[in-house]
Length: 302
Image 1 (cartoon, one colour):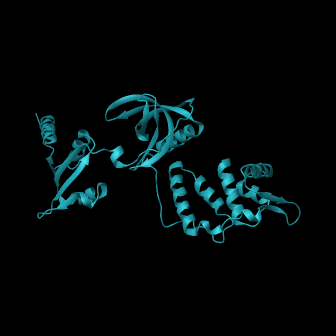
Image 2 (cartoon, rainbow, N blue to C red):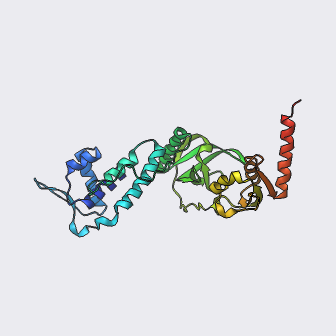
Image 3 (tube, helix red, strand yellow):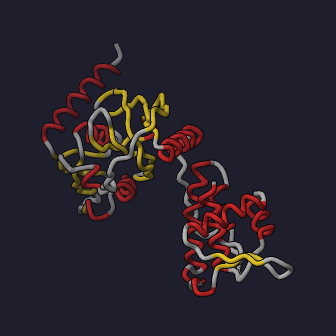
């Protein structure tokens, strides 16, 4: 993409005293004419670039514009590389790491390709999610509406949104935008979306940055208290952390946490089998008892 190439060229010019158009053309795998147009675009953007002809000629930034080359340390660059590599885990390509290698061109030390931190943002159904990420990303860049069918705990619906952000949060991918059905900003989980297509162009509106706090996305409407068997300690630590339970004298865990809705609580409790006893709220205890009676009736031998 042109913007990636422009960033790469600018980075190289800030790191090297001089570079030639053929060198840039080979590095970015484009023609010299394309590089010349890129240099013109950087000049229009206000970057004072000088070109000189001859054997010792080349392209450089004027000295009085020179910035500190150590503004990004190797540690900083490695952190960026880790983030870009994580994006490649979604796209299934190496385009982001290749971009980073171009940005790092001209540094005195080459950044290692196998950093100590690896982040995989891909879902288990990577092919499907990656395709949706690319499609939605394209719609955001082209400012086109998204049409899709959405499945949620509240039911099925057809939606049309103006997409603004792709978000990876809570181990899943989401798209955030203005929902033309609800007339408000909403967030939608990608793996609940089907029949996705790009619609008509839209005029972008003023967009507030999405509030991704747990209190905003998962408000605690119902407080749960439960006694959980010690063999499930790992689950509580993974999902909630150590501050939401206390170990009792018999080894069981006294747990307390706020949940968003009752259906989520019932599903969560049932996932423990007989390894949990829900203490509060009492109405959900009654609902679980009814579910147990129905299961007994359903699976009893006749």
